[in-house]
Image (cartoon, rainbow, N blue to C red):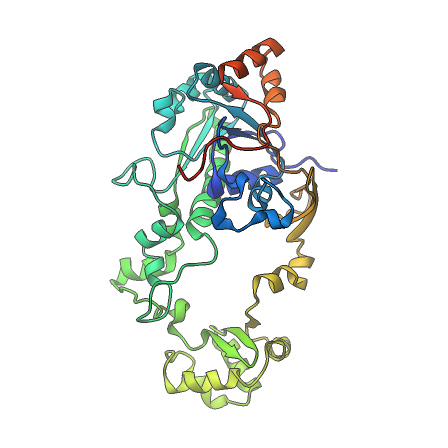
Length: 411
């Protein structure tokens, strides 16, 4: 079996929750050796199934939430107290033998603890330090707290999402956390590692989830920056402004019509026997033509429209609920749901690897770690003796495996 592409890369992941966890998941799935550096209290909050994610105990997962398992396969976990000198010393010793540090704290937190980028660079000039923050390491919002919806609101994306005259609609997926944060961080880390091959030096990768999410508005922003067009909610061409690119109600649910190119719209109109609608392709929703198209879509079921699209190739697909999507032939054949054995839990179904490679495909084949599961192992690898490790634990600078958290993520 071929060696995975990132098997020689070692990552220290100091992040919690979604953005950093998803970034290091991508790296781990392609072989990177990811070590979660968790504190001696709560650790990574998603581990403990916060109540707003639902009652995970119904799935038999106990204190390890489904979200935690999905984000942390293939990683190890060590518990260090960075408020203790020995804990900070241990972190810097780990930095010496690693390539990447992922930091999800607000800017300045690690500097105030005495283990910021400058100290890490002294320990390892080649370290790539990636900070994933809401608003970046510079600018007016450096100290400001936030979550996905806040970032999307400030960069204009949320304000454009929804129907004309209605309220802004929150996305079911975390566009800023994953698209603006995790994916941009993974790209930034890989670019910095590639540059290090030439210079031998690491650098800071400054990832702002707001910046990253704003880049998703490339098409919309271009119209404003070049032409001064201020889009109204639900009236942009690709977000509700064209009848040819719109979700329609079918006889038993909803379907998407994405017949943006004239050839696809022609195929649709000819297929339903309404060639009179061909010239109405770019009319707006709410128009007489739109009402006629909507009536056409209500005349068939989702399955009938799927069969219609098979025959006429016109970019029509059913709107599936999450269960239907995850059980679909498309997801199954693309191996986007995988099953792996999780100790103390049993077989767990998780999302698969979204990037396919022909020779060295990602392998999500290692379970998520228990809280502090690898503390002793990692410290031994870093050169600590059994006596040193015991002394660190006694002093509260490190901690081993724990079945429950100390403290509350609500604090």
